[in-house]
Image (cartoon, rainbow, N blue to C red):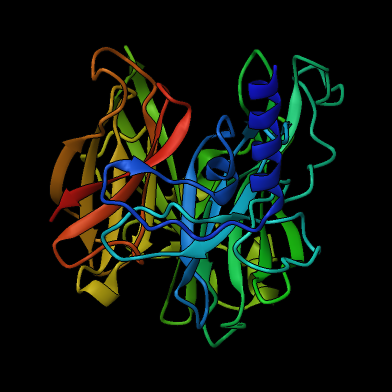
Length: 374
């Protein structure tokens, strides 16, 4: 009993004292926050992991999807959570600090506080029968992050632009009923200009479920994807499309200002959008700008749920895209359709010789990062 009480007291003391940032580690490894390392038994299970370097700092913002945590603090958030912390190129971050819900002050860093909701819960989403998307234990509404990028000089380079889908999660499916975006100011941990750009309660067409924001030449480019032929956890045929809008808040908040690439021109008709990689078979894609490393634009394609991925490269958002390399994420025992997913590239972590790519490993219900030679 004395030993148990002593252990409990030690854990409480560790959790109460601001943690010292851990050294980053070589890949493959888990992305960890100070909450997870503050005390034995602290666990944060979460899906997807986008990141973006913070303006003027050797730190990056990480955005996660649904998160569940336990240990010195327990809770869950069905939607986006966020953390920030230092990074080292070629290494996996292990000293992130969980962010409080905006606009709460970030406070002294590092901190071992637990995760918290980042984006507010979306409202107005419905189930297929038209009733509200809110059934305890069965259906819920969530804003799921689909990408983040630093704004250019045509907007506010001190801010990050975050894009997301408003999803009604229920046993019959995961329909995206809205596409939205919001600006984030890291210096004050505040959100502004949140706008649902496209809404369709029956489910948006895939061309309007956008992600992977890329700023180029005065425009904001965003990507959509769909699998047209699913079979045994793999995609046999699919499409990846791209939309663009002027790179300023007034334009990107206005759905009528968006144009879709048809293969030869830009059209206001989303149904005219053409696939920019005809040979791709996407269950999911993620695009980011690696120009600082001399790699141009990089698209990571997920063709199945057993760990496979393909990496494509282009100099223009519309392509042509050239296949650069292929691989398999080290999820679980590497056998069968194990739901390995959420492959995202991280420019600030990558090097001239290695693409640093995060993935969700269902074996440990966590986001990890691996290195892919290129």
